[in-house]
Image (cartoon, rainbow, N blue to C red; front, side, top):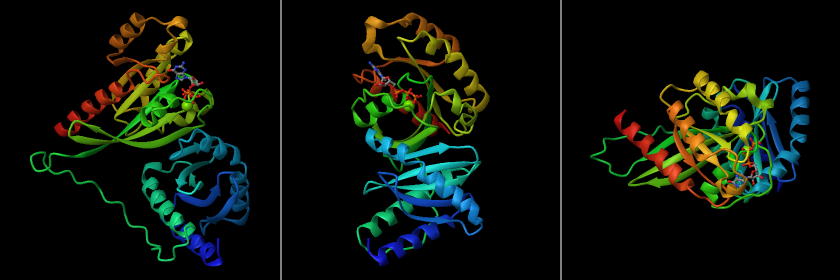
Length: 321
Ligand SMILES: Nc1nc2c(ncn2[C@@H]2O[C@H](COP(=O)(O)OP(=O)(O)OP(=O)(O)O)[C@@H](O)[C@H]2O)c(=O)[nH]1
Ligand SMILES: [Mg+2]
């Protein structure tokens, strides 16, 4: 990149960190984890900047891995005292934003998306880049009679034990492909996917949570605002079925009362290794008053049906509200 480009990148990042006091700093990192540019909030001391820079350097592996899955849009990683948010820039580069521990990630995401658009332009050599970050527009919903086609956004949290297939289910739904290698999710990955439901369009914001106990204490911050929650278990793994109750109690404590809950019995392509019967799953769902779906993230069986069903319920609810 030219000197003008580098200066422009610094300006774009400089304005971005001013958006919110929650942003401590940010960096553009390439797919090998190398830092191309970085900016930190004016209020930070040099030693804090040093520590944060070291942190960014240590992220190379995660960034590399996420690129590998080909499914990188918006991910966050919660560490001891900060949140790291990664947003993909078109050209195999990532904007990493370092946020204070209790920041509202949802409110920073739209600005991060504006920042990556600007960064992509700088990388392409464009110079006519606005440094302004406009407040994201709120979607104003007009009455149904005046506007038959509508867009709705909804947040879904996908939970369940490690390895049950949460990430695979989302990848299969959005990309129609299956990743056979197991790469555990770290913290939480957030991605967006739009799909039609009858005459309307749904913008799904899925929070793909790590099933690892290690990340448990952070999970409570993921549930507020969720309109649907999936709890997955693996039909070949009875422990993941037994642990559904743990996930249910977490949801009861932290999610909205009227959230749409679905018990998802995954990996049904492995019928010959099944150790949790269809009947057991159905019975538990009934007791919990949850919807019940049996899916395979490998073959895609029932996954479109699952999201269509949830989508219809969400739209009905929003139209009634
Ligand atoms: N046969 C089969 N394998 C699956 C299915 N879903 C997931 N897998 C495999 O199970 C392993 C774990 O899948 P993931 O989607 O990474 O599991 P996860 O629930 O996201 O796990 P964490 O991120 O650690 O919480 C991977 O090797 C997947 O390929 C399925 O429906 N059928
Ligand atoms: Mg995962």
